[in-house]
Amino acid sequence: MTNQLEIRHFEYFLVLADTLHYRKAAEKLFISQSALSQQIQRLELIVGQELFVRTNRKVNLSEFGILFKNEAELIMQQLHRSMERWRLASEGVEGIIRIGFVGSAMQIYLPPLLKQFSADCPNIKFYLEDLSNQDQLKALEKRQLDIGFMRANEVPLTMDIKSVYKENFSLVVPENHPIHADTFKSISQLAEENFILFPNKRSQMYYQQIIKLCGEAGFSPTISHQSIHGPTIFRLVENGLGISIIPNSLKDEFNYKVRFIELTNVPYQTELFAVWNKDHRNSALPYFLEMIRV
Image 1 (cartoon, rainbow, N blue to C red):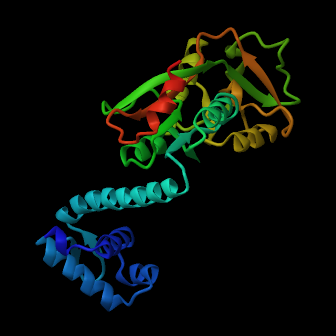
Image 2: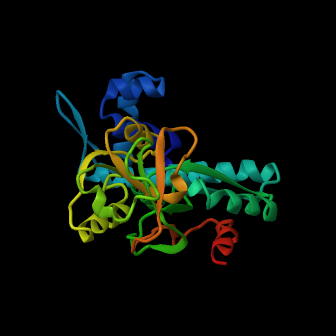
Image 3: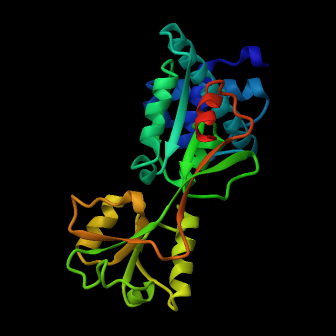
């Protein structure tokens, strides 16, 4: 069977599986709708299963189609990576590492690490992608990332995790707010404020720490807005729509009309973790792991 399959079969299948619409898929592939239909039928004949359930109004993946999609994605990823390794090897590059990170990791921790790695391993290149905790875990599971730097410590058993950096939180208030470093005594002073936080689903560890911090001060925070982007949070605070608590390294003291107060006397710190697949297949990754294990 496998010697009858062609790369285009996987490509056509994945585009149709993504759009679930023959006309839209055909347009993306720059082929006719009839040609796409013929190739999908040919694929189903080769694998001996119906991959799509067709009705007059829509197309859905069948049970076998869902299973096939997972394998097809892995095959195409492996193909693209193999060709990329070949291209890089022909240019004298010995490897490539795909690194995911949350925005605050790029403020203090990652830049010197990446600079040192580039100096120590000049023939190993790296790609960087700014992603939420949740999106990094998904990308790691799909082998789209080799390692992620996130503020989450709940990961699948198939992954290794290491704490690489701890830091204090900082309170963010408008620059004209009555609370400043000299008058701030306790989180309880913020009980009547609206809070702007990272979403729980995107950063559970951080979110729960803030909830506990407020709870121990005797109140449950009123959450008015949520965002995963520092600049968005700062603009909202700047315009009086709430206050926030962020990792200290995320603060920007020059571009916004806000005030940052580092929380040095609270029982919690925020933590940055490195996460990677235990059964990774990237021969370049161990060199990078050696640096974060020091």
